[in-house]
Length: 124
Image 1 (cartoon, rainbow, N blue to C red):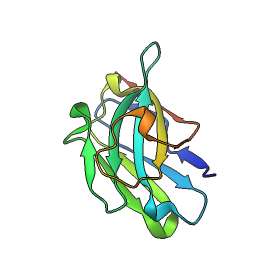
Image 2 (image 1 turned 90 degrees about the horizontal axis):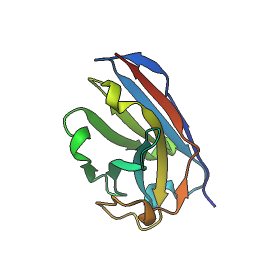
Image 3 (image 1 turned 180 degrees about the vertical axis):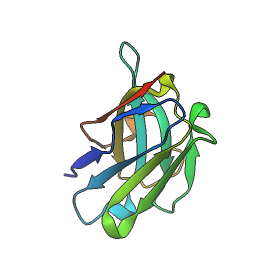
Image 4 (image 1 turned 180 degrees about the horizontal axis):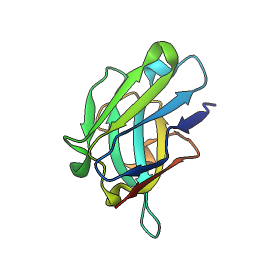
């Protein structure tokens, strides 16, 4: 069993930046693909970004050019750097882990473990 704990969410102004972190328990973090998803009030959870075990990355269209996913296997941590934030980025952001380690993991059902989420609010 893997536990994921997100942090870094807070209130930020339009145009600002945030870096979210997700720490995973266990010794097999480096073999997992990791993903970030988000869910705004009244909307479905949507894909943000993913990074494979070999550090190949893939982004949702809205995230390209503004968000960067990265990982530090020594710290069992995956990051999401978010720049040029907009009010429509307001959501709960969730970290997820996929045991396959493969690239391009864009669907919720591909992931085996989920964190509890961290709230990001972007004020206009």
